Length: 341
Ligand SMILES: Nc1ncnc2c1ncn2[C@@H]1O[C@H](COP(=O)(O)OP(=O)(O)O)[C@@H](O)[C@H]1O
Ligand SMILES: [Mg+2]
Image (cartoon, rainbow, N blue to C red):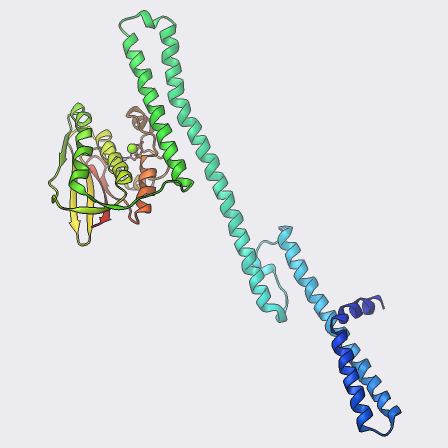
């Protein structure tokens, strides 16, 4: 009984239409018939039939709404393992497909958020670790100096120099962190222009002459067509090339570092080649990850942060291009990328 009452209230949606229909039928009956009573009876039957019809439509709709409500509750309460557990029956198959795809989307969104959260935590962990190393070293040297070494002419200058070199590492780390955070927050604006490659590369390579000479490494910039122009953000590409040359010198013990510009159709390739340590295949795919270094101690000892190539990768992506690496352990490495002519 109470179900009928509830359904009746659902049926009210159709009530006004039904009353109008009844009135029209009633008028027809009066028009067509001599016996008013007979027609009135007929009409009443029709009306009862209609009420029953509308009531059952209402009941069905109500059941469907309940099933939909349950599907949403299940999603909300996180009790579903897979979208296949959502079933709204034959009549609502389109809505079912929509709810399933919505469910899948929220699931992947949640998974992505969790991954992002994990990456963030890992990054923070790495940063703290990277900060700790130079700070502990500086602290150690200062403590030793204060403990008396400051008056020992055999070690004092050396300790101060070592502490100073660690402050340089801290400074490098700070700069790279600022770059990374600018890239991630989308604040690194690029301004693309044509620039003359020869004029661009000569001063950069010259800046590295002392560092190369100190390690007895030959630094060679091969001839570039004087009119050749490439398209990109000069400041950011300078950062890329600087990183490549600095790595090449850092990770090369003997031999040479060469810088070449090759023309390939509509593109120009900037290439930095060294005769250094080389990188094993398994590491090549990882050196662009933040803080990944093949040899952590060596990298730190030469002032590396492990962020250089991660920054380089972002910059090249913004230029719609990517770094290509060829390397053989013990023989050397070759880093290169294309830019539009
Ligand atoms: N030219 C190279 N030769 C050998 N190894 C290299 C070279 N360039 C990069 N690597 C390796 O890739 C790692 C990541 O490079 P990078 O992101 O620039 O960080 P880092 O600050 O350590 O130089 C380096 O630690 C090094 O192990
Ligand atoms: Mg580097």
